[in-house]
Image (cartoon, rainbow, N blue to C red; front, side, top):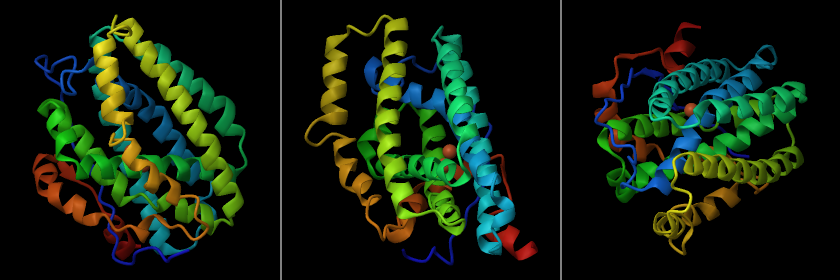
Length: 287
Ligand SMILES: [Fe+2]
Ligand SMILES: [Fe+2]
C-alpha cells in the first residue's frame, strides 16, 4: 500500500446554499430519470455521512498519528457540512412533494439496524468502500464538462463543492481502516457487499421517486438515462476500471492524484464560500 500524501490539505468550507423557487424541478438536463437518480443520492447523504463520521469517531482514540488525527477532524467537519447543505437541498425536494421522508426513514432504520452493531473494522470498511464510490463519482463530475453543463446553475455548485471535498478526504477512512489493523480480505469482501446493496437500494429509491412523481413510465427519459449513464460510453460504465482498482491488494486512493481536477474549480467554489474552516494542515500545526 502506498504512503498517504504528505502535502494533502483537507479544507472544510461553509457554503450556505439556497435553492430559489425558479430552480427547475428537472434540474439535470431537463430529464426526470437522471434528475431523480441524483435526488435519491442527495437524500441518502445526510444519514450516510453521519454513519461515516460515526465509524471514524469510534476509533479516534486508537489513532496516534497527528497527521491522520488532523485529517479525521477535517473529514468529520466536511461531512457534517455536506449533510447540512444536502438537507437544505432535500427541503427543496420536499417542497416539490417528493417522498423524501419515507426514503430517509428507511435509510436511517437500515443504518441503525446494521452499522451500529458492526465490529469497528467492518464499520470502517463500509465507510472506506462508500468513500471510494463518492471519490470516483466526484472525479467523474469534476472531469466531465457535459455533466457540469447538464446541471442547472442553482444546483451545480452544491455538487461541485461536494465533489471537491470528497476528493480531498477520499483516503481518510481508508487510512484509518488500515491504521486500526483492517485487512485486505475484509476491505474487498465489504466492497462486494456494498456494491450490491448500494446499486439495489439506490435503484429502489430512484424508482420510488419516479413513481411518486408520475415519471416511472416516461420511457423516453428512461431510455436516455440508461444510454447516458449505463451505455457503452456511459458515465457509470466509464467508472468501472476505477471502481475495480479498489480490489487490488496494493490499492491506495492517492495512487491516483486527482487534485489538479480540484484546482480547476476551486476559485469558483471558494468565491462562494461564506467561511473557510481550519484545514487539516492548520489543525496539525496547532496540535
Ligand atoms: Fe460528503
Ligand atoms: Fe466523504
